[in-house]
Length: 70
Image (cartoon, rainbow, N blue to C red):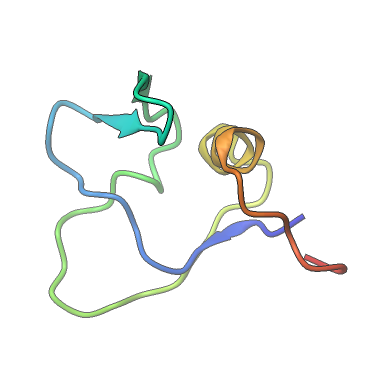
């Protein structure tokens, strides 16, 4: 399983985001790991966060299958 953010979600909106899905439903999700809500940066940074509940949530709620070994 991939344990890193290649592009962090926004660190605003009170540590939460709402995900919209193609079938029309939306799911709010509060970020739990402090590494997920890093300060806003203007450069792209990869953040490693093994065991992150936020990364685990993203992986179980996305529709794109992972490649073998990720």
